[in-house]
Image (cartoon, rainbow, N blue to C red):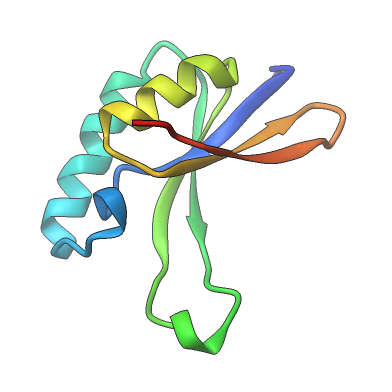
Length: 97
């Protein structure tokens, strides 16, 4: 994507409250529109444990500075983003409200 950093961001299920599929799809379209200035790729999170087997969300990998993406995630009422850097460093960034 040609960027030094970015993050996986979603608009699905704000504040970890399940929403219907149609609601999540519309929210993802709004997120893509809000991030249109930056390169983005579709992604999907998958659960790591059987306990959360039904919890998977569509994501966007957005190539932008993490400080901007924290603000975008806050706008869509998310609790965290997974920030990534070109050197392979990753970190879970919690959103403060």
